[in-house]
Length: 250
Image (cartoon, rainbow, N blue to C red; front, top):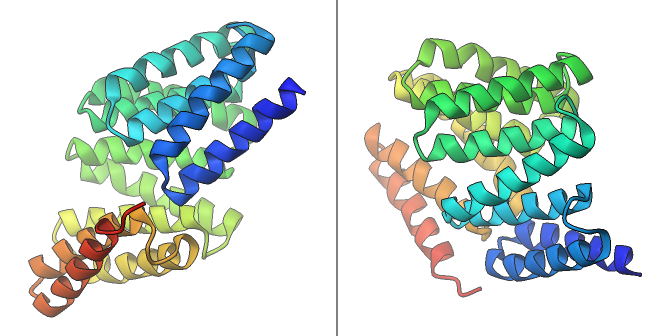
């Protein structure tokens, strides 16, 4: 019964996260962690799963110190119980790398991301969607550091893998499109960036819904792009839509 309860709680966390209800997801994730620790002890792989889910929520809410501690606990459990080359280890390495990246700790992020990529390519082959995730993450690190020439091939390879493996309307394809658009945007190639931004936006609006919290950030980014390129009316429209989403009480 406890196992079923933990699974139900874990599924609820995922559902709340997808809906953008992060505060409620955090409450449920803490309960799930307590349940699985009591049932299986502190070093069970499922405990690592709950620690990782909780860390992701803290990262989303920018509570980075809490997130780092939980990621490292999860990483230690999985490395000990599953071995250092297991795919579940690679997943946490990727998450921890992203945490370091958004805090500007790019050298640490790059090292962990390369470790995760090597594990995934060995276990899954070069064209798996999970490999695309690590390629995209590594490209993001290079992008953050201004190493655009290095970032481009990784962004493009990730997009190619995702379109082939997941289909052209998948949210992960939208992420790759948006990242590649951001690269073109950064180097001033706006005519190449704009249709990629639009494709990404259309996919996200369809899959997330027009009022999802993440859409506010997407609208704000589009507004910034159009304002920079002289499309004032388009920029104002996206700014209004972003503000309306952020005004929704959840």
